Amino acid sequence: MNTDPFHILKTIYGYDTFRGQQADIVQHVIAGNNAFVLMPTGGGKSLCYQIPALSRPGMGLVVSPLIALMVDQVAALRQAGVRAEALNSNLSPDERRALWADIRGGKVSILYAAPETLLKPDVLDSLQNVQLSLIAIDEAHCLSQWGHDFRPPYRQLDLLIERFPDTPRMALTATADEPTRAEILEHMRIEGSDAFIAGFDRPNIRYAIMEKDNPRAQVKRFLRDHQDESGIIYCLSKRKTEETAEWLRSEGYDALSYHAGMDRDQREANQTRFQHGEAIIMVATIAFGMGIDKPDVRFVIHIDLPSSIEAYYQETGRAGRDGLPSDVLMLYGSEDIALRNRFIEGSDAPDQRKHMERQKLDALLGLAETAGCRRQALLSYFGDSCEPCNNCDTCAEPPELFDGTIAAQKILSCIYRTGERFGQAYIISVLLGADDERISRFGHDQITTYGIGKEHDNRTWRAILRQLIASRLLEVDLEGHGGLSISETGRQFLREKPALMLRKPQAPRPAIRGQKSQ
Ligand code: ADP
Ligand code: ZN
Image (cartoon, rainbow, N blue to C red; front, top):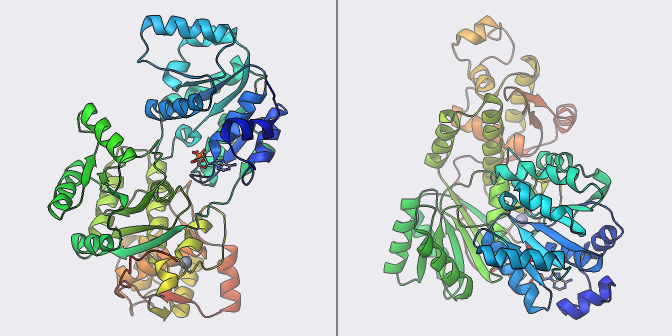
């Protein structure tokens, strides 16, 4: 077989050129190096491990979290003439024996397996005698303990490093903020110099976020511009997915629901219909997600607040994989925020985790309330940047602003004078001049910023604070107790005092136009 990656690209996949960093990644791994690959959904991660697997001698081993995902990949490879197999629990003993005979005979080019299956001692032992071209861990963010897709068996994948120390390892994901990235690299012992990080931007997605007033009316208005298109609506609860789907059917839409409480056959049937059908709206909980490979999802709506910016990015990322214009809408209301808060406070998670969750919620609200371009805010969360995009709701209709310079100065100076270690609630209490035992104990009722913020109420101050966090004037201590400190940008702001425009907290949201982006 011809092992030239360009030849493989052309003959097996029928493409003339590699996209983005694909060529670099493929060559890097073919040369025997490890790689971490971060690429947005639709970026073309599969080729990055499949081509080196076919080019290097031996069988490529691919770890994937879901059977459905493996089945699709295997089917696509087989269609292209590649002998790919999935090692999963659905195989009969006979099938299993036959598969292992073929693997040992060197007939299988790429083997997919879920971590639970792969890490069984007998499977590992059998693999020991097989030449492996590489080990690829797909959806690698599943190993992050703090992530929203944590799958405990992923944590044990580091066993593979000891078993196959000389085999190149790849970890691939479409979603990973800085801490998650670091966690993956450390856990899988991949050097930072082996990381390939593509931009996060999904230029064909038009972002819109609105305060929730009448969700059904808002959804209806949005859908008017998406007749005869397929899309996903995410809800928080199982019941709500069913109620919403039923309502949509009564409105004449072809709507299905999907959640973990449904029986498996029904769930799979719905997924298959959505995957292959046209103009179907899937109303789902986040159980519906990984492994959806429908290229023409034209819209994604979050009827309820997602759990974090990463979750939002990943869920909205299911729109527009084909690169054509797609619309996403998120609705958020104060009940959602209260519910999330209660959820965080009521969980048995360790304190550190709760702080992290609170911080993630704040970052998400910062995105929802930003006065600037949504895309800029979203990308900056992932350490990426762009110009104002002209393809989001705030770019299209800038929200009403107010001069927040004085308010920001008050907050920053209050944080400074209280020693840069207190959290939001405390800082706001000081600004409001609250009669509070802790405040008097620390003597903070004696400082100049005590009670200087009575012109705004608690809710307004919170909204302002969130915007300062979102625009990185403030930093939140993630490891500790959520203490706020002033960032380098914040110090510069205090020195230079430039005018700072913020979004008016009570301002009505701009009406969503819902039309397709140009
Ligand atoms: P990801 O796993 O990153 O979401 P995929 O690997 O599924 O993305 O690829 C997304 C789509 O892009 C697929 O339809 C794939 O065939 C296509 N694609 C990938 N690489 C190329 C390329 N070099 N040229 C053209 N199309 C490509
Ligand atoms: Zn924008």
